[in-house]
Length: 211
Image (cartoon, rainbow, N blue to C red; front, side, top):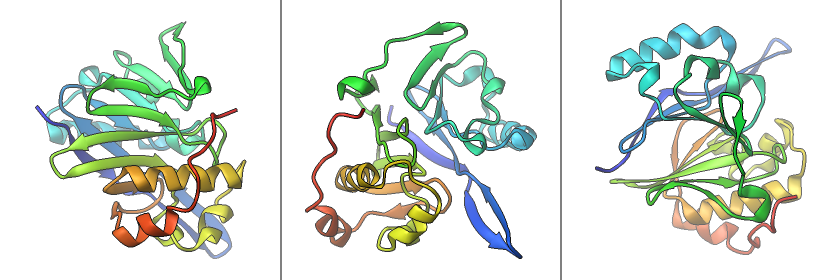
């Protein structure tokens, strides 16, 4: 059984009359494990429950909750999923038990042969991305490593969204571009990784072990 990836909510970020509005992309992965990635703001709980119901799932059927980083629009409804193991950035836990995390050693957190979580520092130093193999190709659910498609060639978009370490973020972005066929960014629609993108990002070296 292969994994399927479904965007429950397409993220956005925009400036309206000098007020900045943003909410993250929320993604559901179904297959051998059911996983929800980035649970939006605390005000979006009913929306997520409704979307899950439409897919025939309930919160207790979710095996993993993954927050690509700890900002409030990415963790707001983690508490809906009390049967799941939680990965928030580089922190892995279930209830009050905290598990060894492989990211500081430069390793990945492997859920199974088709799904893994890797450290992609930059936007925050603890950021992670989810790499999942599907029938359509490799999908990277990248959180705010990529703000939206427009920042692929215009780094002012992701720099303007905030970056704790721009050099690490450039390296992490290059790594994910080389790995993925499609990218789901933190605040915009899914986009296809083209040969041109891979060629453009090829010269940027893979990131070193994360700090």
